[in-house]
Image 1 (cartoon, rainbow, N blue to C red):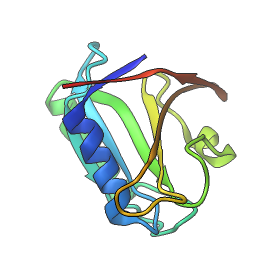
Image 2: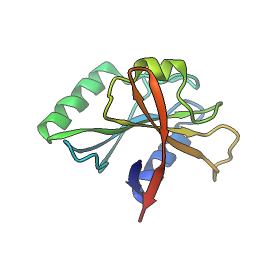
Image 3: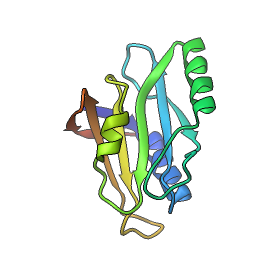
Image 4: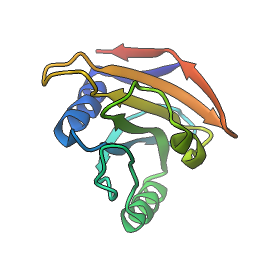
Length: 138
């Protein structure tokens, strides 16, 4: 199960809304070994595409160095789908390389500025996708 605060949930959804019609992407880091998402880190979709996201390689290297310096790891890796449901695509599954992370997808398809938004979390390990419950706390 993924547990995150309402504030983090709202930040992820706001980023998905702001980048629409392109896919948004980012990371929520947390202390190593805790599984606790704490620090919201929106990233630039280097692909600038409504159907694909890609972290800029330089930004990603900088992020991992920063997380290492802060004894953090990626707890959530998120992105949005702008025209489809919030479920990992084949490409998403292929690029999922953090077996300990929660992969969050937000769908902005068929919504207006106020929502509703699909917000779903998955574990993706060696190509196997498992949906998990999401608990939002105050």
